[in-house]
Length: 164
Image 1: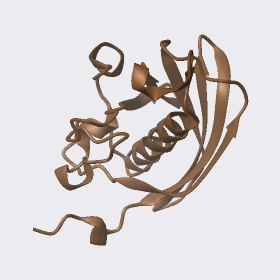
Image 2: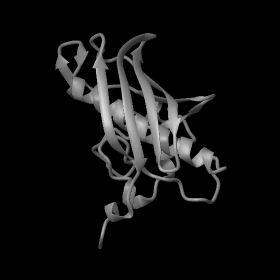
Image 3: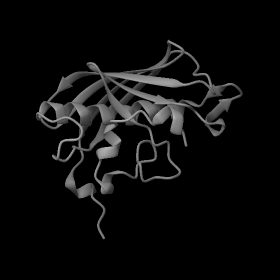
């Protein structure tokens, strides 16, 4: 796990209900997953991640699926943060945090993403409705943008809850 990089505090994923905390990319309960953490940084959202050796495409570079996954889960977390703030809440309030899922994911690979260096994903909310957000995200390494994404996220329907 990426304890040093991902443990940045006040992350939306730490507030997701247990039924919605199993995602491979952002689920805190998925011990084999990436367990990314997304938080506010001013008007932007930020996620940091240190890729592991098994995330290799070719020696020295991350495979594109990881980059797309990071943008995807960062953006769903960003949408959750924005919808929560729009409702007048901040993390730590007693109100439940909405859990967003992806409705559309578009990625544009600009440069190869280096392996073994910290990845930073920054997001901006470009549209916000009652149950939907559009997030523009950029994935960079050492200040160089490697991947851009546009993700449409929606609040997860109750039908996605685990049934016992």
